[in-house]
Length: 286
Image (cartoon, rainbow, N blue to C red; front, side):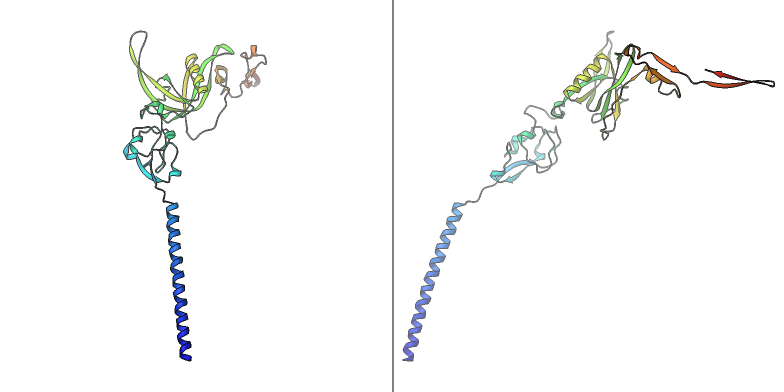
């Protein structure tokens, strides 16, 4: 009797084990099918090569193969106007400075046809380049070079007194982008070299420089590029300049504009003693 019970328990255990194995295999099969379906539903996105800077690129510099390389981008991360082939970017001119690994895009380049090194490639957007004729004095004996900043002074007839002239700072902190020489023929037929200076200006500043160069004489004052302080001056005329270092001498101007140029000089008085024998006389000198 006991033997038959043991056999019955053994058979029951085998049946339960077989059932558990069948259930496990069925679950593993279903899980594997679901994994395959998920992988098929979400395929891996293929990266796209985008042209980027391989080295620092300066504004106005021509792009060559040594400056360019490619970097992988996800399709949704590809910048607008980007290049996927280095050949399409070679020969173009950088409109802004690029750091290594910066993507090269159309809006960072100058329009096709602009050559590297040409002056228009170095003009800041919104500004203009304007050249003026000068000489060694205007150029501070060759010390004014591209990259310097200068103030522009204008000397012209004083509108308040046609018989005098006035000098006034009309432009400040102006960038010099080019210097050079050109040949000019004088009225006598002789050909001589004339220094030219090209400045970067706003449209309003271009108008002021054109007027200053046409109506008067201009001078440059070289300044430190880190000095951005704006200084307002009244200008210097003959009366102010001559009265600048007169000690106690004061120049008084009348209130009316018609009499403003008539100056009144108040000279200091001096006392001296004259000694003749035992007589002492005090003399006042004006």
